[in-house]
Length: 468
Image (tube, helix red, strand yellow):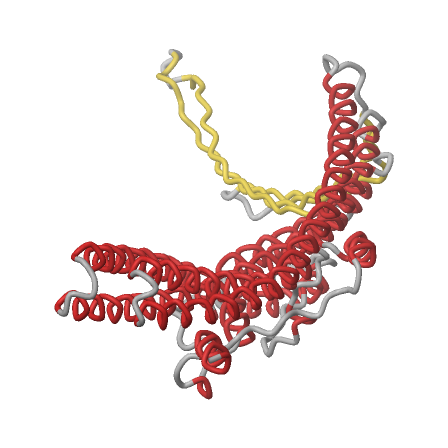
């Protein structure tokens, strides 16, 4: 009988056609490659990379062209041949001006350089944000995969329960026909069968919900799923917490945000100091009615600085410091939350592992009890209600065991997520990875659109757009 129970539990996880079953790695790879959320955050990272390019551009000269076509009207009075004044005389002059204007900031107390450094820290923070989104996406896929497994197992348990109670109902009806039991025993079996069918419908509804969550997380409906292997995790909670403090993307993101706000304070303070700029220009102008043209050029150095702006600059400095302090507070809370999540995940794993031993023993005992009560009922020593109660106890024991097995595996991935190592590299997924520094290296020196590098960037963006 124990072999029968083991075989039943194995079937709950393997299902028919297990040789062709989909693995958790398959689901993770598919969900990762089709995730719109990951693509959204990759695009956000590329936008942050472009902010660095724009900050680099502020350190370079700015050259603009300008042109102007102008028509001027002049009114005057002319002397007539008879000594009188004639009516107003209208003259029209058309002129064309072409010019180049350039400017370069020579000194701004380092404000532009500070903004560039702050933006680089923002890029690093955005990269960690992308890693954190990938972690969340992968954990959602694992959870959806396990919930489908759980729901399918529960549905099969309920189907088996309906079958067994149906057999008990038929047995009670046969015994009632020969006068061994009363109509009450038959009614009890009928009520229990109706309840079992209701529970089966509820579990089928839960399975439908789990399948929809799987479809949303992975991008398609689940097929036949094979058992998910447990993830490899650190041996102790203290070791896991130490790893999390070094590697968790949410914590690293918060650290870069603090650094960015620290630099932003210096940039804001620099805005209160003088700025020195160099300007130069050249122009050619011509009267369109004349072949002659005038050439001109100019060069100059200007300096400017704030004297009084109504307290706005001082307010901006105070605001930058407040934003820095807020980021520091967020960093502290993030570190504490991560530590708490690691501890909670290990506690969940400990509970699941401890439960497994107890539930295996519960299943063994419940199976023996059910078989014994059913044999005694055949001999008239037990009522139909006793048999139904024993069947319910066995069902609950099997469900508890399945639940604990699912929870144990899921807890290992929750631990991996809590320490920040639930990623493609650590899981060894067979997917094309995204290099967050590749696009940055193409734009960090702010190439122009007409350069070869600029045209290469256009091709990269077109390829990304065509692939989505």
